[in-house]
Image (cartoon, rainbow, N blue to C red; front, top):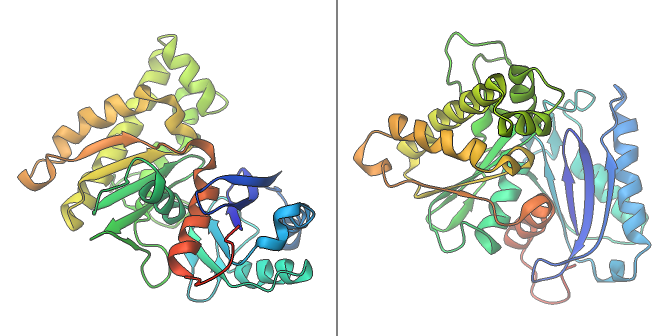
Length: 305
């Protein structure tokens, strides 16, 4: 089983060993300040999946969440879900599974790590030994594959590129820092800079030639390029995969990103860096949570829904 928790939606799915979703359920992420109200949406997702024929095949659960996460303690404090601060989501999901008869192990990872697991297993980073995969959506997250292995770090936050500071005098970020990549390149930031309702409207305006919208995507691409170049310089990656809802804008985002990367990735050993769109689309978070569970909770027998 896979769970994908974000600022916009909470989703769950039963996933076969080839990455195919055989059943899924989704709820909007409640805007409530009550942590249990948010958890109730997740409970509904689990309960709905428990009513499907494939539920009896569940043997493990991967939980991918917007960060930061603390995998060591099973808690999350998503910047985009204010009701959850140090929320024990790992234990609460285990409880929901057990309530429905599934007494199975679970693993918690950041959504960027989940997407990375998916793209390395089945998508654009497949075959690459060193990769950065990014979620550019309501927030900006990421994950790393180093020497062929998913690198989660002790708390599960390794690769969280959205909170690298790329503007030392920039705006205050909800994380507490200033000038974070997320504050410049998220869908929310793009929409605000383009003076429209959301990232989709910004993309439509940019395609129509609107100067503010085009500038917003250029600004986002520059911030992403700076963060990517810093990461590549530090750990020597050879591909960057860009996914998430904002990545649906395609070349509106990728063209300025690649152009600015030529400036920021200046050293010889990072100039070869390839930028590719994610291959798995909107299901990457769920497939990624499943893929992370497969890697981090090895099973010797039984189905892996």
